Amino acid sequence: MSKTLGAPNQNVITFLFDTKKMFINGEWVPSVSGKIYESLNPATGEVIAKIYEGDKEDVDLAVRAARAAYIGTWSATSPADRSKLLHKLADLLESHSEDFAYLETLDGGNSINLTRHGFVPGAVAHLRYYAGWATKLTGQTIPLTSGGNFHAYTQREPLGVCGQITPWNYPLLGTVWKLAAPLAAGNTVILKPSQQTSLTTLLLGELIQEAGFPNGVVNIVTGSGRSIGEAITSHPGIDKIGFTGSTEVGKGIMKKSADTLKKITLELGGKSPNIIFADADLDKAIQGAFMGMFTNQGQICVAGTRLYVEKQVFKQVTDRLVEMAQKMKVGNPLDPTTQMGPLISKEHLQTVKKYIEIARQEGATVLTGGNILQDDNLAGGNYLEPTILTDLEEYCTAVKEEIFGPVLCVMPFEHIEEVIERANLTEYGLAAGVWTQSLTTAHKVINALEAGTVWVNTYLKSDNGLPFGGFKQSGIGAEMGYQGIEAYTKTKSVLINLN
Ligand code: NAD
Image 1 (cartoon, rainbow, N blue to C red):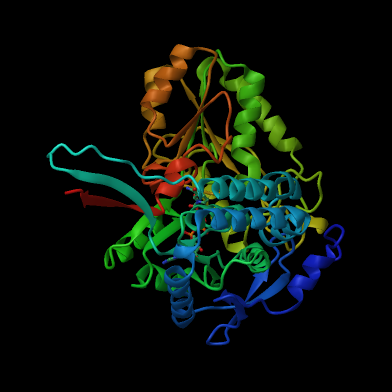
Image 2: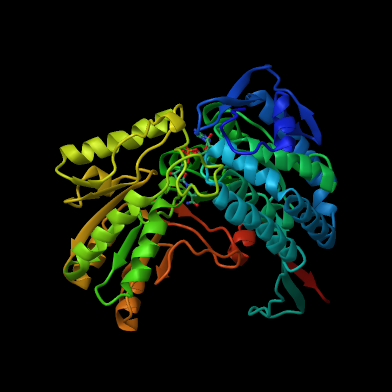
């Protein structure tokens, strides 16, 4: 581990010492093939861990364990006991918060402020929220319309084994979002974290073991999407896929799941519009637009990447955004004063850089940024300047495609109908923002925007109780709230003849 990266965390150093094994049936096991891959620190390019690389055979073992645990133990564990175990896991995670924040920052390059004050406490709160739901899933008594002396009711039952596949951008939170609701509802789970950021999920596995979840209730398999991801998607022993990731991979998962008619929840990509009207509180709107774009290096599915600004305040808003971008501290994510860390990988850095070059070729002006940062203290890391583009048309690649990096497209508009039409000119429909002091304007835009979440005079705020999901090609189904747990249950109708 590099000596340049802040104060070392001894627990994490100890954790990273051995080659990380997979967690199957309550045990830590190497992959059947014995293959290993390396996890890199995006801030330095250094290897921080070696991890066993799973394959079809490992998925098969995990499915067997999860199915046996579902039939033999977990579906028969009372909701109150499931709730207790989830609370215990939340308590353990809270007591190890600093280790998780440090490891997440080391592995994913997310700034320590974000992991410490956002992602880790967010994961704890999410576990507690769904721990509460375990005892509150109910059915209904149904008055029959067809007559007869019957007692008719419904009950909610778990689906069985869930294959949960997550991306790299906030790995711990992403994993916990895929874990708490299915477990609370009585399902067993196979977690497949991104190959680029598997470490906090594996560390969570240690706490799952310590909390006392029965063997096989939670399994963790590590490796590439092509091998274990596809093995999960096509495995006949898996009943549901919960996937968060790109729209392209999501479409493939939907096709593959069709063969065994799995239930699916897909949380996919986005290209969210954020609209500032001239009557908005501009200080708040500019802060919100900046934070909604550059948080986590722009590697957030709901990032407000298409900023539409009403013409009369366009210059004022862009000038301020440029000034803020130029003052932003980019650097070592373990330094609490850092505002923006590195991108996840060298490949991703090059992809994002290429989008900026294409934008230039298509006529865009780069108002600020656009360069890879390579000073001495950033050497080896995947750092890019926060970038703001303008002079863009709706057909430009940077406006249409998800870049998933710190690249903001700012465009002027003249009237409300025009901006609504342009905001909806996308295949995505994840989220949107509106900044105005007029309730009439806000309501008109809320109702017209094709997006699963619309923020008014705020951005990025989420809540465990509020469903989150995408419209159009941004997804199917929702996480959070009642919808988030309902998606891990099925309804059984019962008719009892009382004669
Ligand atoms: P990705 O689609 O490349 O990978 C996501 C996960 O799927 C990884 O674990 C990967 O190994 C696995 N995978 C890859 N190919 C697979 C296959 N053929 N079969 C099964 N699994 C496969 O996405 P990423 O680059 O890790 O993450 C960035 C994407 O995630 C962005 O598009 C972003 O918008 C999206 N995302 C969406 C949300 C949301 O809630 N809507 C949240 C976070 C990220």
